[in-house]
Image (cartoon, rainbow, N blue to C red; front, side, top):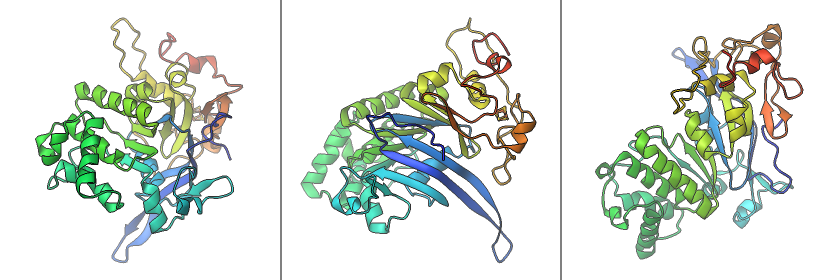
Length: 365
Ligand code: SF4
């Protein structure tokens, strides 16, 4: 099986995802018969190294949010494995580890899963919907501490105050309610809640998409600062490639339930290999009025994941599709060191000249 990223020899992944699938059943009729499946995620492999940020990008409907939620088992995966490094976890979880020292998240029972959730947290997209309007900020941030029996009374108050300071908010805000805050402040409260249990790994699910552009940079900078200070590992899910490139060490591009390219963020920005990544990057605005506007307009909408195209799923929109693309699924392969892509056109790590000419800045297209 190919893996979407090779760990560097000195560092083993904190998280390994193998052949992850999530099919949502489509039910019809009074008997709710299953008449098909929405294949939201259909065979995803990714590794995330400790302390890194892996950006996960794609259009809406690509399955990126479903991947994040399956990893945390906020929704149950249909198939596949999610392995979390057991080093540093509590003794009970270490007892669940395999011979490589990884805990498989999927089969975990309720109690060990709850323990593991201390180390795997999520920041939600919508800072307006994700905070309970009837709870004070202090109660929201302190709730995980109560649920896990980690602190109460004065100690909890002190930890909440410290968490508010950590995310750049006044500790006195603990007495207030979410509606009293701006979008950016609410997202900081969401970050403080995610940090309450001192996790190792955080899924940041479009954490800045609902914010004004002026506030987005503040939250992104906060996440980077916290990563440095606390040694956090992020899966950063977003559709905005510019934000992802800025915050990520590596980026994985998803299309219709599958990863089509993984590369270091700078490599992906300047030397994308998959035609879908090339098209996505061509649409990123550049703050230079003299830069060539060689945007690639993709034909049509993303196809339905109920009945995805045969072979390469991108073929119905790919300007370079040929016969083989309908017949064979292109495997995700390491085409250059640390650079993985799934396209029949790549040979010896190179694209044909006519495809290269469509890259932004190449002067083509
Ligand atoms: Fe396009 Fe074919 Fe490559 Fe898919 S495999 S991206 S359809 S050229």
